Image 1 (cartoon, rainbow, N blue to C red):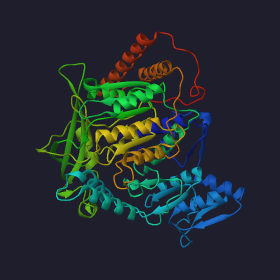
Image 2: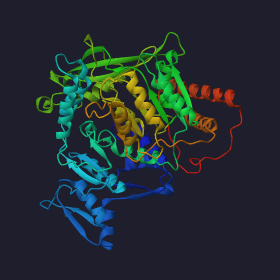
Image 3: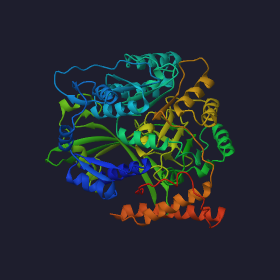
Image 4: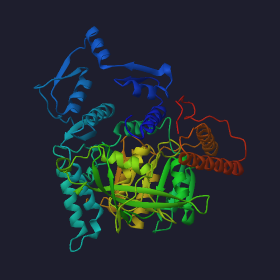
Length: 572
């Protein structure tokens, strides 16, 4: 709640609860402010308030069958052991602690250490999947960034074979996972700081879950949306701005339409930044395919000087990339900024020892506040050829810098991004926005490769997990080569592309009308926010009118399996 976007964090958690169909919500050890924020959205009869004190008292009144004493390391392994043995886990200094003994289960969960909460989530995930759990050493952020940067620049190296470089990188990735024993006939889920571990283990299907920024919500979204009995694929959006050869778009469109999926295409000029931004966030789709160029955009290096809250003069250097879109006002443009901190008080922001060299304090928070209030102008500026991490998707008119606040009208779609090197930055952004699965590439792919992988991905057996589908698609495309495996998946393992065959236009229009109702009730806090909300309302009114013209005014009342579930309301 101390973050500037604290209220939106509450909304994201409410929406995850709604998607999961939860009927009992425990608010445990929250402050009064946190509890009030969550309780304002949740039905009072569903809320159970509890504290650690309540739990200790309950355990004393009803002692457990046994207690597992555990040390402070490998806590996920300890938790999973206690869950399987119906024990209470008690942490104490000096108690025995150990890594897992793999039992040869069909699924293996591999989790980096260093963040206790991620180990707890990994243990519960492994328990739910009846999987083995192995913890591996955590990877420093600068090491992870350097490795992904090498993958990004793989085909720019001169005097060195890209295949040899890729083989070396895959070997280094594998060495970061000591103790991994491949599950025979199964798969692996990696809980990672942002390393594509699957690259090092091409023998089996794999997927990834990123520890930061919001692992728990990502797992909940994936498990809820991956339930084939209540969710599935009704509609798809295909984006092709004609910036590159994209034969996969026609192949995927034909395949999905054959299975009676509602397919909406955005070819050439219709794939402009404004329409794609609105569609990605607001249209109720279940599958999204991008077929375009992706890369870090050129931009600017701005230097700012300001006084922080303590009165100390700070000098902050920020790299900025922009994406521009049209508005209804011919004299007004929307500008999306991606900012990456480059240097503070002469010390590189990527310096792993920067905290020893400078005191960051409130400098970044104060900079953001000054920038939002428009009380800060740069004292120096220069053009730079690449803003690291901007990961711009090239649309017909300009760069689409994907920073979605939500996806698919608070849905949990599958994102398949065929743009080159589209996994590095965009997997985290789309998962944070609510995607249940994200498939992207580590390095460039050809049009023929993209078409073959995408075609197999959408035409596979519906009951096959997405991770296995992607693995088989790459096996089919690249044959016996264990080196070239450009595609990586992020998301929970147990989910698929089950297709619903019901009255899809009526379902979509109902979702659009429900979303418009929510946004009509939204109260804006500023003029700029009101302008954004007005744009959203216009979008929904326009879409509803299109569906009325296309299919008439009457919505079929035939219920669907999803409609039978009672859910909490989504919040914009």
